[in-house]
Image (cartoon, rainbow, N blue to C red; front, top):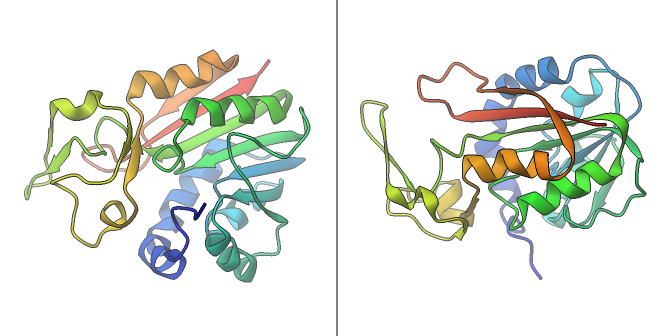
Length: 219
């Protein structure tokens, strides 16, 4: 099966790359200093690998798209693997930290991803999710010229959306679609995986929150 981002890697890197630095600063702050192995699930073209490494961790990247990993290999010397985030090829307790950055919109089973992340965490290990805010991003959101957003009742429609009447033509979602996970489903994925949520925040300074971060620990 062709991964969703295969054939999009160069375009994606150029489209997303310029904004990665601002997000990286928030991610580094939420991670804090640490050590040991860190698995970056959905590492894409490797835009955040160096930021994770700067916290003192040894980072390993995993992504479904061989095309994305091709660019990541040219950018960073971290070990990289192609694999399914809901069936991680690692033993239980293998990692001190797991990061899942911008992945909730690109997997069909976010709860399964979080369960797998919890499985490969060692006791006391941290999972950091950082991604789009599901209340203010998705197929249910109609952007307004003044920066406001209209939230349509389609917020309740979960799963993969290939089209939305409000997505910008030629933009990321118009190209690859997205998976929508309403806020309760997203938060409950951590609870149901047996993780203890330590912090939930809306990072960045956007007037309407664009990003949501959840930091959780394995008991």
